[in-house]
Image (cartoon, helix red, strand yellow):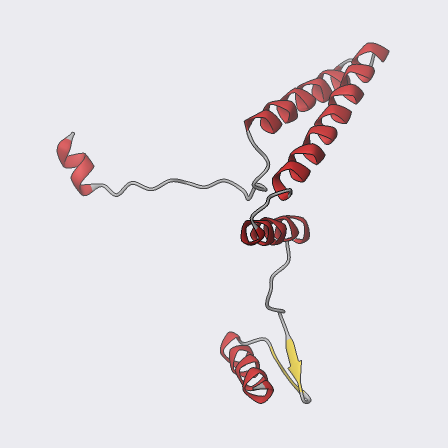
Length: 125
């Protein structure tokens, strides 16, 4: 066992990105909502539909309250970081565009885009 620990690297496999306010309570609520949704799709009764709707409403309400609670922080730096983390989770976009155009020159190569950014910022200062 000691040889295994010594010679085999260990690392953690990270899942998909989750906002910082998505905690275990949110996860359990989401699982319950999904379970009730599956039950409703299997047997479309009024009772199953109402249970699913209530679980979905409760889940959305919990997420909103957790998000507000998380963003209502007295520390300005943490607040900014949390805000941009939230924006990133919603937009799912890259900060650097696929194709960049400047002064009639377009490029999708990473090195050329980096040089274009560099020239732009040099001209600003």
